[in-house]
Length: 359
Image (cartoon, rainbow, N blue to C red):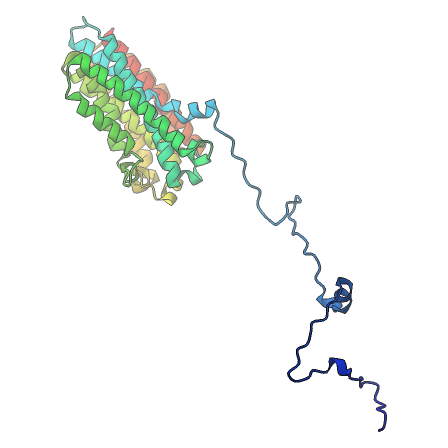
């Protein structure tokens, strides 16, 4: 048999020739043999971890560090700048009550309890708004001061517990003043006030998301707070109390309007339909000017009755700059400044007018 001279032909090893019906046993190989028989292009190389600029592996964005809320953060969460909206109507209502008694009787204990009710509701609603807006995601693109819940600095349940604590303080003070005055039907009014404070941004359908925030602020932090303070002290409500309540309510609406103008774009994106979102920026700015200046028109009534009341017009030195800022503002910081000026205007207007009435 002639030998094959073709160099490409290879000799067949009979031991490796498959036989029908036979079972071929696997040949064990060492790791070195497997590595040697593996083609170079098939050898797996360890994958290199991708790096970003700055040496961060994996191409992942840095995780933001959230610091635990400090005492100062909790104080800021109470939104101190809004507290004048609770102080002014109580001062005005107390002064009106003193005038209704012929400037003879003072009910300091009831007045202080009314102040506790107003402050408790105001602080409670601020924390409740922090909680409700935070869990809804409304504060995800907030441009104003950071919130406790939205920023992750505090647990939502903790913020809710603080809100409920201040609502409880307001409720207890309210029960006390009702017992002292003997006007037990006022318990229903107090319950409605607490519910209104909660459902401003709480619940499935908060009225603050439907353009009704200014309406409820005007009613509860204006007329109800002022007239209620007068009523639990003397059992009646005089004309001074009603008109002062309207003035206090308008200034409270102005503070809320400045706040909503600052957050206009963010509220629109989040689906929060405040009055500013519904009527637009220009109309909101005009309404703000009306809310701020109309109380000074009402001041004319008190000037006719109380000789020193004209001095309250000096508060326009704060009110007019606030109006000018809002009418021309382009940045959130400008609206925040206007909010502070308006809140200070409400405080000085209310306390100063109360002093001119009472003394």
